[in-house]
Length: 275
Image 1 (spheres, rainbow, N blue to C red):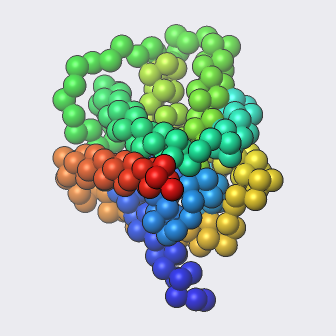
Image 2 (cartoon, helix red, strand yellow):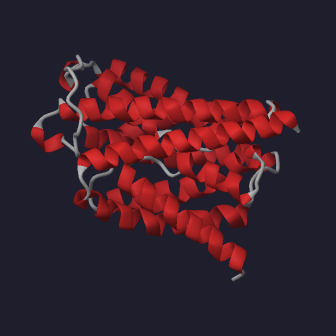
Image 3 (tube, rainbow, N blue to C red):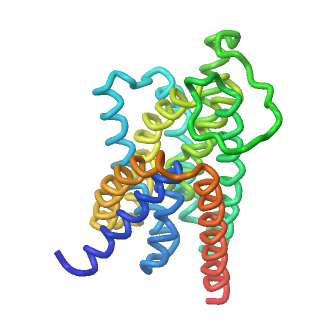
C-alpha cells in the first residue's frame, strides 16, 4: 500500500474518532477531509458517500445482531430519502463548485443547531433515554409517540427522509444529524430508536446517492473505501472514548470543529469563485 493510501486511511481513522466522540456522522467531516486531500468538492461529496455507506452498513449489521434494529422506521425514512438523494446528486453535479462549498458551510452551522436540538430533546426524555445531556434549555413540546397515529408517523418519517436524502446526495453526508432530532421532535421518538432508524435509512440513502454520482463519474472508489475502513476503526475507538470525556468538553469541541470546518469550506469556495 502506498504512503498516500495509508495517509487517506489515517484521515478516515481520525474522522471516525471525531465522529464517535462527537456523535455526528462521518460525512460532515469526511468531505472537508477530502477537500484538503485535493479533490474538487463535487468529487469529495460523492466519494464521501462510499465511506458513509460502509459505516452505516456496519452499524446496521451490529444493531441487527444485537436485536436492536428498527426496520419499519428505517424503511419509512428510506422511502423518502432514496428518491431525493438522486435529486441531490443531480443538483450537486450542475451547480458551481463555489455555490456547493458555501452551501456546505451553511450546513455545518445548521448541523450545530440540529445537534443542539437533539441534546435538548434527549435531556427532556425519560432517564433511560438520556445520552450525555449537557445543556440546560427550556422544555420543548414534543408529542407522545403513543399519541401519533401510525399513518401520520409514517408520513412524517417519509417527509424527514425526503429532506435527509436531498442533503445526502447534495453534500455526501448521511443525514443523521437531521433525521434524529426531527424524529424526536415530530414523532415523539426516544433518541436511541431514532438513531437506529436513521442508521438503517442512511445505508439505503447513501447507496442511492452513490448510484447517481457514479453515473456522473464523480466517485473515487479506492479513496472512498480506504476512508470508510479507517472510519470504521476510528468510530469504534471514539465511541468507547466518549463516556470518559466531560460533556461540556464534548459540546465545546463539537461546535469549534464545525465552525473551523465551515470557515475552511468557505475559503475553498472563495478560491473556486476566484478561479
